[in-house]
Image (cartoon, rainbow, N blue to C red; front, side):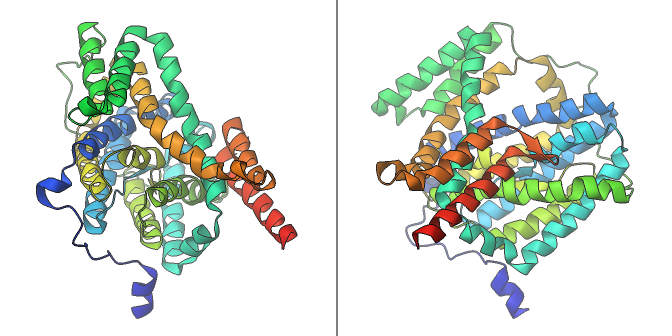
Length: 412
């Protein structure tokens, strides 16, 4: 038991300088929590809907999947963020969901669920072993942040796509963001992201691009238990890529973002939670649990350190509520323009990208040789290629780390 306590990091004692009560409710952090919830509950939902459409899944399965992904993730987020006094946004693996688009062409959803459960058990025991924490500590920070920059770059580029498609809504949001960013005296009372969100939503509603909800729609989700089917072919095709997508693609993004913001996320415990959560989510038809990179990046993009956990708790609470209202979420997401969310996500990613580029390419100020690993990592990440059904971020990390250690050995 003592060794297990040593592996699973306990919450640190809250220091005297830790903001409490109303001081913890920093306006920027709370706004970031709201924007992160909107961002994480709209764009990623498109992947679930794409999988559902391509596989012809029934609405009952889709709603159960959405309920599990959001509600359970939200509950974990609230509990962990409060216990550790740092933002720990838990969601579900988007690359893992993308794997299903091709996998469900030749396997049933029950077989995929069986793979979800096995992947959860593997992640759980890897967390208990302590191996994950050791591996992440050995990862070069500049290479990891170069991968993070490559993953987040498309989100920022969505800002331009949104501006092209809905110029009025996007233009008003961008102008509001820039004004509140440039004139900081005003921005202290109305954070840039909140101003962009408020003005954009107002214009969207006035222009008739708001959501349309059917009066016959049942608002509360009714999750169902999906009977898993365990087949060797599904295990071979899905388990390893799913584990990689959680640990080497998603979790490492979240850990890197939180570390760069000055936090010390409990890597082993988070891995165990992701494994346990994957098993629970899988029973209801959701892909495995993960520490989300983009949402955590938004949560720490502004505001005072030590108050970000309050924004994460708001994010988790909204996430859980969204899970309960899964049928409404699906209806809203399919009835309103997605470009407004693309614009909000792009604006929120700007300070995050700035931080990622600064951490990744700081070597450019000195030796050019040291900049080669993160540069190659960034290029491979944005290439968006896949090999063996494993997405580019994993291969980017692998290649970047190999180059890093080769150059390090050569220098020694």
